[in-house]
Image (tube, rainbow over all chains, first blue to last red; front, top):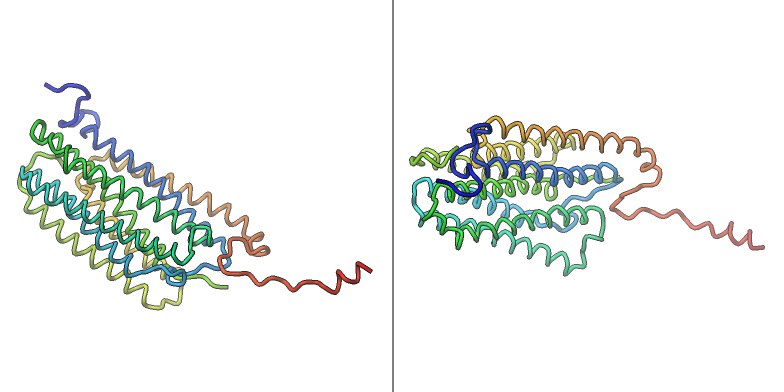
Length: 204
Length: 127
């Protein structure tokens, strides 16, 4: 017998989904609008500018960003593997993969902090020019999303994992939903990396 | 994709193949950036195409979109329509402003050359 909000495990007859899955996809649709608006801002600023630098000209480190791309892709794999481990009913394996996912998030943020620190120590701030303003806005907002995802994943690795013993199907569904959010964060970076670091410049 | 089936070996194999494809796609993206492509439009299209393929792999396999209900597709299609309309409206207004920008050099990120000071005219006016 279920208590509280129904359809946490079994799908609703009208949507065919359990509630949280529809909820997280609706949230991701709103996130598409958020990052889509910022990417559009990038396009509008670039098209409207007489000149636009490459990432290299502004001192952005492509190799660090590429490393970050590998790190986030790896974290996406370990995130989905943690969900697969729960399907296999292996909690230890779940904890291992979720732990690696959180660790990858840390590595990403450390590399990002190193990049930002290098900029600030050279006196380069968002106010420098339009390119740096949109660079810091896009990567800063993305970084905050990574931190938020890490917080959720850390909870689900730690105290949140108690639900495995009382309601394993619901807990597995929670991991699936957390995974959807984490994959989206990875997806945004897949587009951010070439846009900011690899795009050719425009010179008068 | 539900939390009911227990055999994940095929799933794991698929995830590893997608992982390899994503790593390969990232290396390809960087390699293409190193090649000097004359046309800016083609360079951007190639980069965007590779990113779209990578994004599609993440969405279809890691996010299980390939096995998802139609309702989720409808939600994403709705978001995509709004994105396209937003981008379209902004670029439309951007076109109207083009003449102003060409005259004033708005949003330039490189230092603009300032016009020479008209020192002689001012000194004549004072007398």
